[in-house]
Amino acid sequence: LRAHTERALRAAGIGAGSRVLDLGCGMGDVALISAELGAQVVSIERDPSVAAMARQRLGERVEVVVGDITDPKVDGPFDAITGRLILMYVRDPAAVIRDLMKRFLRPGGAVAFVEYDFRSTLLLPCPELFRSTIETVTRIIRAAGFHVDLGLRWPEVFEAAGLGTPALEAHLWTSVQGDDLGPEMCTNVLRNTLPIGEKLGIVKMADFDLPALPDRLRAEMRGRASIGPLVVSAVARAS
Image (cartoon, rainbow, N blue to C red; front, side):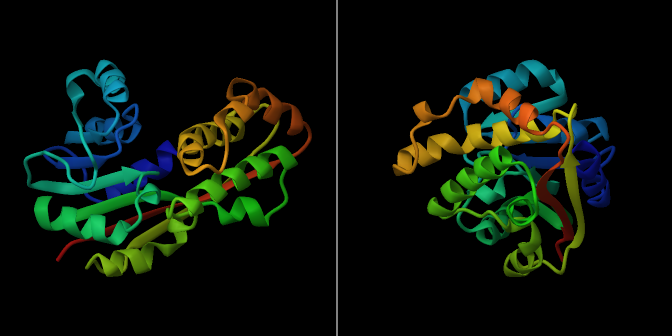
């Protein structure tokens, strides 16, 4: 996802002298790209333990702040607001973007996000374990009131947020034998959603052997290709 994400960040004008508000730090992959482009980055992470690991990895290149992406305790303004695979986990992405723009974005600043659309994996042929894992993920996301199809809904989301039509780039990746992209992506997204599903009473985490899942997926892929979710970036500037 790095190359796709970097193109979106560059399209948002992120570079030397930019100040960026990054949503959903995780281990800092997206924030790090912006920092390497020369920007000053403040990244929001809700989990204190993950934030601590991100700080250790990123050092002084990124300021990692523990908090809620819908109400970050930071000082603006920023030249860009960014995020990857994060707004799919909020019920009203347009409202979040609109509020953050109002509070933190400079006039003429940019918004750049990258999200999945899982429907490609469910519609196209792929190994059964890969498909069933993504089906579990989408069932949990839908039950929580979140979004499995945000990638292709960017134009309506941006319009509702008060932005113009975004510049879109879509990437449909395939994973084949010897490529860890599919097994690792599939396992990571299941790991992220299982706690939500257990809280909702949909699944039990004990029923899933996450450490063994990547190897099981690799074994099933022998001689076959897996189709991953469609990855869609959207970039627009505020008026």
